[in-house]
Image 1: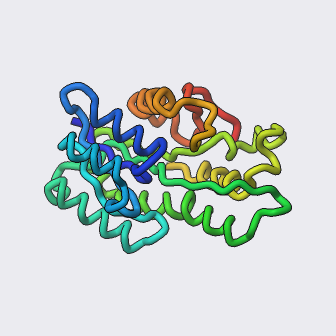
Image 2 (image 1 turned 180 degrees about the vertical axis):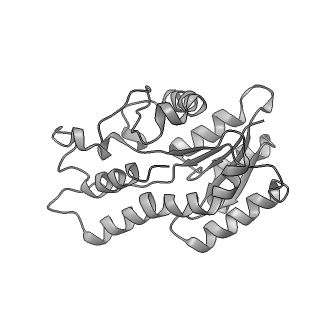
Length: 218
C-alpha cells in the first residue's frame, strides 16, 4: 500500500490529488494530507471522515516548527518509522498573487520564495528520513510553466506574475490554477498521478516535466 504525504491539501491540486488517491479501488493508498489549518479545511475533513486512509496533519511550509512537528506526527502514525516510510513526498503547497513587473512588491516576492522554495526545502529535509525508509523514494516538486525560462518571452508569461514565476523558477532548481486554470484539475491530477507512479531517476530526476510527461525547458 503506497504511502503519500501531500502539502497544501485543503484545496486545488492538493485536495484533488488527495481525493483521487483516497477513492482509488480497495483503498490502496495511505495519504497524509497536510494543510495550515485543519480546522477550516471543511472539504478535506469531510473526505477524511469518509475514507480512513486519509490522515490530516497540520503543517505550514512557511513555519519550521510546524514542519518539524508534522514530521514527528507522521513518524508516529507510521509506527515510529521502523521500516515504514513515505513512498511519495509531494511538495504542492503554493499560492500566487497577480502582479506585473512595475507593480510587484519586494515583500510579496520574498514571501512567495519562502513558500515555494524554502518551504519545499523545509519539508524535504524534515521528511527525508521517512522517504529513505520507503520502497519508492519519490520526491515530487509541483511547479508551473510560469517557472520556465524557455517560455519567458511568451506573452502569457514574461512580465506577468513575476513574483510567482521567479519562485517557481527557483523551485525548479531545488532538484530532489485556481478557478481560471486552463485545464480541469481532475483530469490534470489524473495525469499527475500517472507521472508520479512511473517516475524513475533516469527519466525524471533533475528535469522539468509537464503534466503530459514531456520535458519543459527550464
